[in-house]
Length: 247
Ligand SMILES: [Zn+2]
Image 1 (cartoon, rainbow, N blue to C red):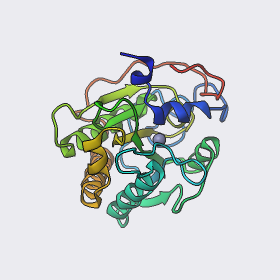
Image 2: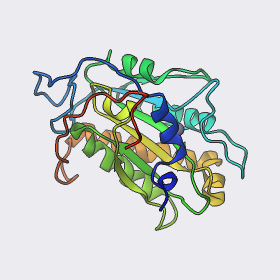
Image 3: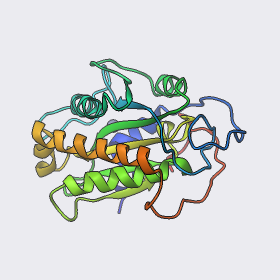
Image 4: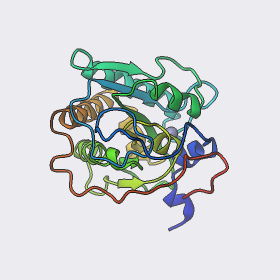
């Protein structure tokens, strides 16, 4: 399997813009809700604020499907708004962008870090070789593992094919390493796969995905990491930078 297959276009493009954000060193706060530089702690429970980030935007279209000609930035924004709509009323919901605006990744991290008791969910769609399909979830922090498991399971249940579950990927990129709050990056499917591009282009399917993701967030808030398996090992890696080689 080529490096290209292992590092889908969407995420590798994000990684190119990686740079330092915030101080390094372990936080003195053991709580599972609140800011923590490394996130070496169980996942959050009882959080009241959810930040939904729609990937790309403005001058950065993200992936563009050659099958449907739809742009990742538009589908991500639409899905993010649907997730926000599902959660409003029960959570304080913050949309990182509500329109077709470019926001640098470091700026997204800075904005997320202003909300100490929040979680961050970044919504994307993927691109790679044509046969590859299925949702995928990126995380890095220990305190983001349970949320990642829940979001991936939820998206896989919506995805109509058994091979459509790409699973979890632990990768140190700017939106998984640098926020000081639990954070996951969701890939709702491959715009490079003709069948999945058509699905992603369907508003009803995006609503199903949004409902599933919102449900995963609600469950995490209610019971924390319960039932999501053992925590991954802590890694004391520095913040992700644009000059880092792909991992
Ligand atoms: Zn993306």
